[in-house]
Image 1 (cartoon, rainbow, N blue to C red):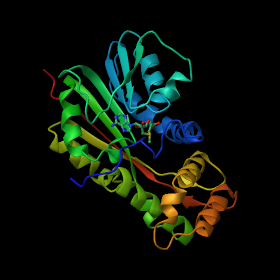
Image 2: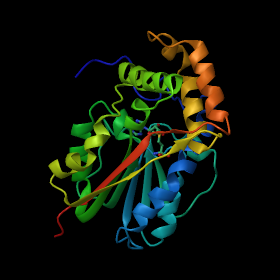
Image 3: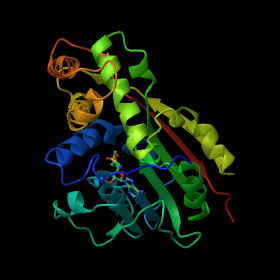
Image 4: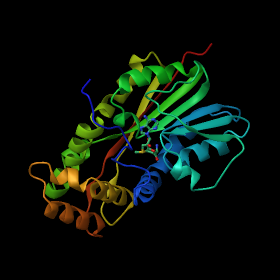
Length: 267
Ligand SMILES: C[S@@+](CC[C@H](N)C(=O)[O-])C[C@H]1O[C@@H](n2cnc3c(N)ncnc32)[C@H](O)[C@@H]1O
């Protein structure tokens, strides 16, 4: 594996950055409805032990805690400041400082494990996926939801497309992000030996300062110095894209979200 200079949050997307709460809140606003629908279509039981990995602002963890009142939800992240600033506690929800690439859980600890927009950022994602599957109890479910870049790669608008693809290039170079990997998410889950594997996709539309537009504008803004260091991307292109993403008349596809889920063989 290529040696990377930093990991998620060291500099890129640090939770203390001025706009990181707003950026991740916009992402949650865009993605939560489909996540709740997918999770709600699993045979959730009120006593389930759930694990939410890379919880961000914690919206999914709180939803799971409400749906599993007799169980427990453990929500992890490298940095818990965005959840701690919200002061919304539930008795069956605990927040844990945990680095998925380094820290473990005992085998067979959870009935449901969910992660969203996380594995694309993990350089050791295949190895981590195997470990996460080992944390599932017999009959337990894993559901991953990850961003795919192909709608941006094929965007007709040049400034939007080139600055957007620059985001993936900059993140690959700094923290090892790969937003092509999620295209094969269904097969990645199958290879782990899970059964009942299935998948789903949701597209997003940007323009008119919708939640995905806001998320993408703030992403471009935080990465601006790295983007301007890429051949062919200029500050003028970033300004043009920023204006388009706020424009009520502009429409383009944002990232797609590929979801896949599967079940560990019941006992
Ligand atoms: C793009 S955000 C997504 C947040 C949340 N899952 C959502 O969809 O709203 C990725 C989150 O994963 C966390 N993260 C990144 N690498 C991690 C790791 N190795 N272990 C645990 N959390 C990690 C980040 O701190 C951040 O909160």
